[in-house]
Image 1 (cartoon, rainbow over the protein chains, first blue to last red):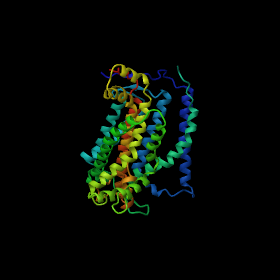
Image 2: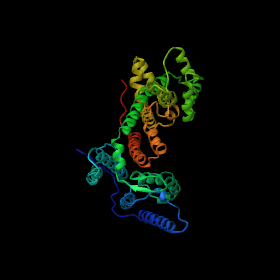
Image 3: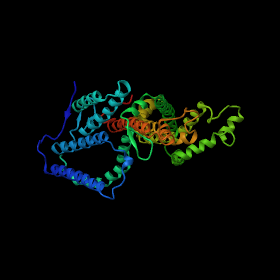
Image 4: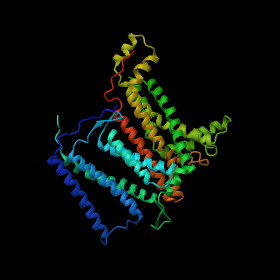
Length: 138
Length: 294
């Protein structure tokens, strides 16, 4: 029997401090993205061809950034990181669970490439199922 | 007691965030980008999808290097941990010899890694090196540059010479932290030296031993400089570890795509090990009841 000992903040309401923090994060990232965009459009823009950006890799990193933003929003609504003891028998926060999900997904994709084939959509499905399990049980 | 949350502290993290972004995140993003493309230089790239990953994962070159790395780490741990414990147990706990022993133990750790490689390269040469010349005089056919077994033995002995001190110092710190009352109780019970070690010293050293094992495993798994200076990965590929193979592929052959894919796989393995390391360090022994001494 899995014993999920949860001691997360049960208040439910978003505190003013957390809301300010959240707004600050969003404003900071928006400002950073804006500055970067206009700088890259200007005449003095550095040549970033060496970074070899492609649409798929840009989407991949955008999803990672979005996931981190979602974690910030979650933290604002439920501060404290939601620590609990799951099947691994030690305390994990939701940040730990995201890290485990992403790391495990990386290995699932590599294992899929090595043993099944280059079609990674099914591997993505397995990874999402794995991530849901991690967030539910770990 | 509820602690007030003050998110203003996050602003102090900003300088570090920018430093990490420049030194780690941007290069990592670039490596990910390269791992899905092929290039012939001049910033021209061609999308190849997951081809490099499939190539690396199915290449015997990668498997062999990974196996060599794991074998090397296993040998290193099997030698350095027992040897480190033995030396720490034989070191004096008080008196004038304590600082002398500690300084002697710390000396190899202060030598830069490439210098260690150079020292052993010269030391093992049959014409000018003390070790190589002595072995040649004794009639032992030893040549680390042409014989794979000799190269492995030399690299292992070099690593043991360089890093056992770390295990010794960690174990010693664990030993001197044991209160005298434990030894007094053992003497009253008439415990033998082995039982004192088995039931008092070893359990009390568990935490530092865990740090030693994990540090040495991580370090030996990422080893590059010493074997590169000593053997350059040879003879043949017998001492080509993952890091050496990676550099050969990226800089020697300018195969940036496969090298980037291999970097990402290597990075994921290291990241997993780091997580295990961090988790064990932070959770080991937490709330665990102390075992009774027999």
